[in-house]
Length: 105
Image (cartoon, rainbow, N blue to C red; front, side, top):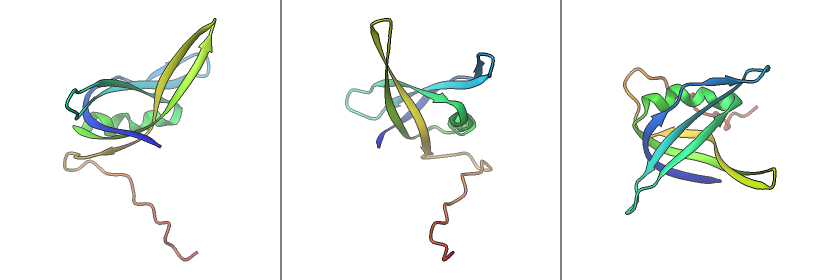
């Protein structure tokens, strides 16, 4: 599991691609390091549901997978976000419900 903490700089709108209207979005995080990095992450399919949370957050932790692809002899990498934990959300913004894995049934 890879993750990085930082400040949300930019969040794109959700776009639909192709005949099947596959949803995509992306966002940029600036890391909290001695030499800050601006890193772009992709949101694909159902993970685009994170866009409202990202737009309301100031900073947080991004959990992501590294994906690599080859096309026409060239290689490409992408960082696909699957989870975001906000450090701070405004009042009234509903957080995700707690996971109740400790139920006896």
